[in-house]
Image (tube, rainbow, N blue to C red; front, side, top):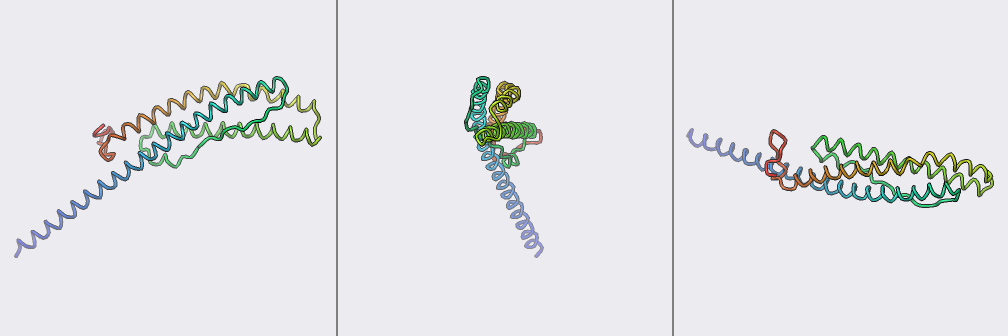
Length: 193
């Protein structure tokens, strides 16, 4: 009689243990899948932002030339992708900190360019609407020039930092690609790199 009860408790315990192991493996696999997807999205966003940064740098250099010649310049600056919700799935803190800093830099420089461009267009609109005269716009161009002259150099430095961040992200993604469901040991080193 006691053997049947003991056997049923052992059977129930083993089935709960097996279910727990399956649950842990499923959670680990889901986390690994989300991390790989986040890596791919962040890598794509960084590559697009690097391209946009290079394009915007060339446009600003052309804008500086037109300001020096006191000519009107029109263009469309590329927007930066600063979505950071995918950072939640990255579990390497130094990498997350680098990517947050990168997003802040892109947001900051994008807002700076947008603000300067908006003011510039408003000045030209005011000139066409006869609210200001031509000497005023020339003075404005001369005051705008020192504001945007350092931007191309700053943007090239930022681009170098962003490429380094992309390399760190790619290293992390490659390391995570070959792990067994993203399981990690106590030293935070991949079990199966």
